[in-house]
Length: 319
Image 1 (cartoon, rainbow, N blue to C red):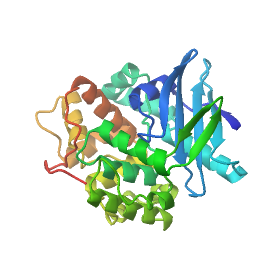
Image 2: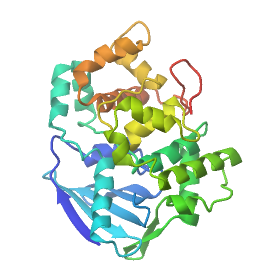
Image 3: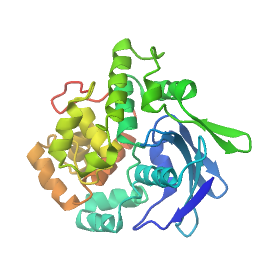
Image 4: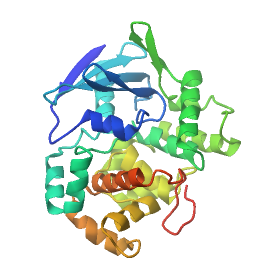
């Protein structure tokens, strides 16, 4: 076990992140949100993007705001693997960004400012990698979130690396791509979905789902590359880039719920066009994704009966 600590740049609340996760770890299976001592702790478990092994990271926050992490490996981790585990854990909490400018966005835009205060300056909680977000989105297409979480948890138990946390506790990560290929059938999803997640596993092994590389590309180029993958349509491609790669300054034009959230909070007569949304979002730069996620979450909290399926900007179900 290896420990680390960081002081977030800008406001950050782990309690808000845990509330955002809604009882799920960011990867929807392989980890949990718990209450320990004075506050919550998020236990994450995921394959390292080297695809050599898996790690668990137990994150907590002290009263002074310092974030503490304990890293456990499915086997003894090398120095590079420890560093990779920390990178993925911090990225999933959007702690890889300097958030000091996030406060300025709220000062410029009172709508965002009010929501920031209401939700304790929340930052988006992202998936552990582009690979895990892509497989999660494909598994979750047209099924309830909890059903998708059960599928992922079952895959982890059968094919994922088990990580010993000490004290008789252990956790399983989602399968590494090479192990996911061993799953010939997956209870709870169709044979076609299994075929698609196998295709995503091969893409990950071939380097086509490298999180850092995708995030460095121009948005349009990254989207084109993602849409070439099995089961990935426009909605899913934007989701992978925003919530898998943690790209902070993009907007999900394919997501109708986010578009409706903009209409609602900005009191528009109709859902905004792309041009209107881009104009409104100019004052959110360089945190357009953070602001959109905040609006989306706020709208969902006010509309708890919203269906769990997603639709594209023209009302058609999206992959």
